[in-house]
Length: 129
Ligand code: THU
Image (cartoon, helix red, strand yellow):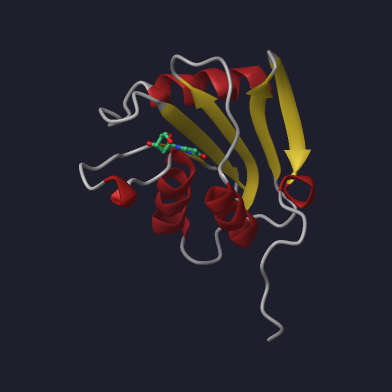
């Protein structure tokens, strides 16, 4: 499967989103180091701050299936209607938690962008412990 195949999959997942407040439908497909694929869409709430992003739904699903040792290899993010968009800052930190050396793919200015987590979130939060 190509990067575009996975982005197309993420776009189909985005159509499942519960996004009646923003009308911004996001889908995420993650491929784990174990070789499995999971997906998620954004789930909004009438209390807006309770909204969960597509990336965090997908990553939570992967953890539920594989456990705490789950590690991300690839993260694909796509929107159902808008042509482009990239993971928000909060999701970048969550991606970093499970995929310090993962690759993240999304569309910007009409082109597929593939970046490392280090490039997506330089100076990610870490404790000294
Ligand atoms: N959203 C995501 O699902 N992922 C992101 O990385 C950015 C934002 C969702 C949250 C909200 O439902 C909608 O997009 C508009 O912000």
